[in-house]
Amino acid sequence: MKRRASLLLALFAIFFSLGLSAAPLAAQKKPDRKALLQAYEKMAANIEKNDADGHLTLAVWCLNNGLKTKAVRHLKRVLKIDPSNVKAHKLLGHVYFKGKWMTPREKERLVKKLEEERRKKLGLVKYKGKWVTKAEMAKMKAGFVKVGDQWYSPEDAKKIKAGYVRHPETGEWIKKEDLPKAQQGMFLVEGKWVSTQEADQYHSDWTHPWILTTDHYKVNTNLPWSEAKLRRNDVEIIYLRLKNIMEGLEPQRAQRMNVYIFATQGDYNTYGSKYGTAYSSVSGGWFSQNDESLPAVCLWDKDFGKINLPHALALQYQFFLYLQAGMKDCPLWFYAGVACYCDRFYDTQVLRKWGAENIVRAGGVANYGRSWFSSYALSPDAFKASQKLLKDAGFLICYVKDSGDKVALKYWKQFWEGIKKGGKPRTLVRPIYRLESHLARSNKKIRAFFQKILTG
Image (cartoon, rainbow, N blue to C red):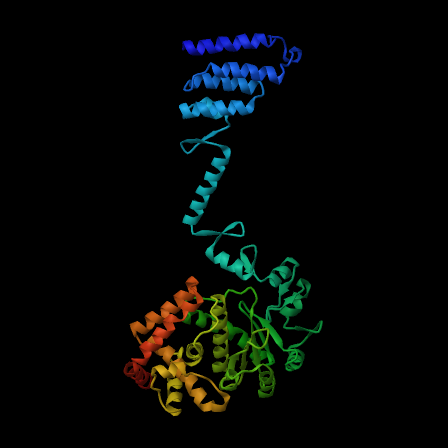
């Protein structure tokens, strides 16, 4: 206390020696910086190292006389001696938050950190500066745009913002004022609204087919309208089937997937001669990587259209899933097998038995040795053999999914789980290779399951 009193007396002595008085501030003569620094040095010399009050008093004097840097030095010294000194904290601009004194910047960082932890507990992730759900992040990565509560492709979002509406039948974008015409069953052809009959005649030419948009697809077809609208519904039903087959996984694409459904063998062959592959030569449903629009392609007829369409959509669906995972190659038997399972073995009531009977007609169920998987290849030069291979692959996927073989099902689920979690592309197919080895050792069980299908 005596020491502090002597310091205060020293301060007053210096105060008067500098010529300061109680006169109004405007009338006072401002001391020069050199004199202030000399006064500061004298006072600082009189303060003991651990005298918190002395350092605090000198800090206040420094602040009042424009010596901010020196004031900060003494305030920090006060806090080193007395960490809970409220006045020193306040003079330094500190704030009290969560039971601690800190700088405003430290508080800002802590608030940010706590908020991040809170949002993470809610399952949110940060993407492009925004906190979103993982599902929303997947949509944003895929290029979707949110308008209100709905996600749209950039093209659709632009149309919505411009005031366009969808044709209630085709799903194409039309001007709002044209909606009454669309509701009357008319269609827009080259800028003119025409009847169904006129539209059918125009769209029967594959160079300008019907274009029907659904939630996931853009369906291009030269089928008559009565058939085309049914196929529009079919593709979405098949999409749900594929989602179920592939353990809930969906291709994340802002753009709809293209589907080409040909009404005539001639149009189908013309397209296939330009964009076809070995696959297109052995099946009425295939996926074209040679066409930049990457369509699922099929020939529709009353007998095999219901097989061709889901087969093509399954190949396309898988392609985009594998592409998202960075997986360039999937064993062909597996890729084809999933498609065949989708087109004829998924339906347990009718098509599954029909598919098994077709295998019998082609020579019976194969002996699935290890070499069967490694030598699997489709060739237009061996059409019948390739058809048999397609059906066998589909049947094997049927066995894996539905026979109750726990080991086979384990490898199946491991593969799709790896795709879901974004595993390394080179390791994603390992469960398929393990599945192959297991199936090669399970011919007896496979044949028993086959017989059950035939007799069931």
